[in-house]
Length: 151
Image (tube, one colour):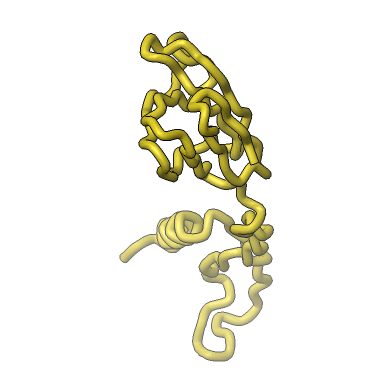
């Protein structure tokens, strides 16, 4: 037989682990040895878990409010053009790539929706750059193969 105090401790621990909150019942004033329904009012009562308030709704951004994750780049030049996507060609971190003549492709933006697109030479020196903002839809390489325009 488990001692009533030990049984209460076990029930309280289990309830505390299950709900992370514990409300102690009010002390019972005993006069009779049996309450209606056959339970002993002087016996310890199991703790009832406290109702937890609803968590506030987490702010979730709608797809329309998220910044774009990629930028469209169109090459209207008759040659393949070397590109660098990042802050500083040759010395900074970013992506060196190329885009074929008269083609369109997409490149990733930073999480905030911005990017810098560079036309670079064979030694990875920057020739021309275009700043891409969240409202920029595409970047176009002109027919001279050295000019960029953000649109």
